[in-house]
Image (spheres, rainbow, N blue to C red):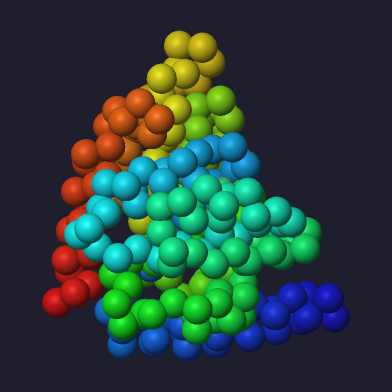
Length: 218
Ligand code: MG
Ligand code: ZN
């Protein structure tokens, strides 16, 4: 019985996610579901993207968080198009939570919507929100064993960012092992090793994103 309940929840979520997707398609909004562990650098990456594309693209942000508005407070300094979702301890966002925020955005004018999911490598991968792509961050202090330990999220990723490469020498993280394991799970996925805070390796990511923004506008 429990399996059926879980399946129904996922089916209901899928239905609402497809509604979100239709709306994003109609409004030509490119949507990223940003995933990664707590502390992997998701919010810092969002800040950098907002700064880099300022004045060229209008970017909305949904901040998923268990209890606080700490991330949304940071993002608010860079855009007024930000909405906080508190999951009250829930470990992932679902399509209905996202749906309820959408009236707060002028989707007609927004080019890119970034949904920062709850920091977690497990269940956020199972809940489609209506996004175009999932972008997964893996930071070097987390360890290079994480792709094989949490395969679903890496299989679902349209792009994997290996963040905090400035800490490579301080950890036993093997970039080669991580890349090989990610490629085993998801052979075509682009992988960007970078350091967000030091602006190392960011150009390739920006180019990748801009190509997708342009395609969505057509
Ligand atoms: Mg964050
Ligand atoms: Zn969850």
